[in-house]
Length: 321
Ligand SMILES: [Zn+2]
Image 1 (cartoon, rainbow, N blue to C red):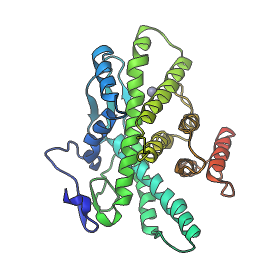
Image 2 (tube, rainbow, N blue to C red):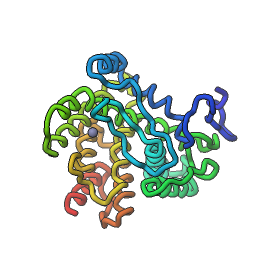
Image 3 (cartoon, helix red, strand yellow):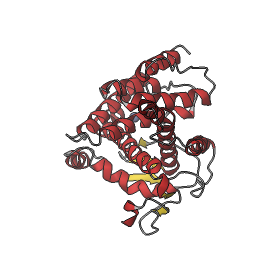
Image 4 (cartoon, rainbow, N blue to C red):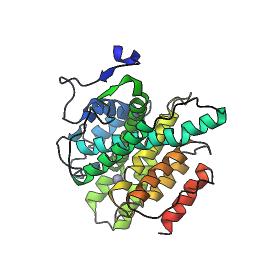
């Protein structure tokens, strides 16, 4: 465990005896399960009940393979088993890294430095540049698979201790984003699948199920915020990033069986009862701005406004498209 105290040199978490898969995201797969089971203090009991009484599969399946993202996470209606595509997991980590890093380097550090009247936190153009490169890599995984270069690109498996904050902080948000995704599928398992299997439903009904799955999943994660709130920021940012990650597949946000992505985001951030100065507003703005630029949507981030107001203004511009 000496890696915990390292401040210089290489950290490499890969252990062929415990890490399955070929993509560097493999080092976090066990952590995802651990975090999910411990979503809140009584969640392990709830899960047991869901497995015994609702037929939820006790296995979370990772579909390993060097392929493009075949599917975003889903639960099968016939066996109530959750499936996660290995390449999707890589993609999600990359989104967490990019959005968080750009937020820190372009919003948070400059703000702290200007409040202090001097450079307390070093702005590093190279870190930001690599984060944008990693975003390009994430988007490329939607189209075709290529190897994640652990020697050149930020990744959770192998990195320099000097840059560990920009790896390990995103790790924390990534595992929370996965927790949110797994809880969403868990709600489908205990509340919706039997109904879906029993009858015919219009698409509008599926949208209600999706809204309920988001709402109940967020309530589960909120129950897991410790009384001292030490993990609150990770939970809030993880949920925000989990929803943002749905944006980069298409220029449109509508889908026949899901609410619009921007609506999911607005509802989630309201449900989290964020303070006006929560980092989630800025993070959501960074995430939406990356998407608007990706598809040339012509949406402008009004920097005269504070982040919460700019978020609302950005959403209004999406609605007016
Ligand atoms: Zn769903």
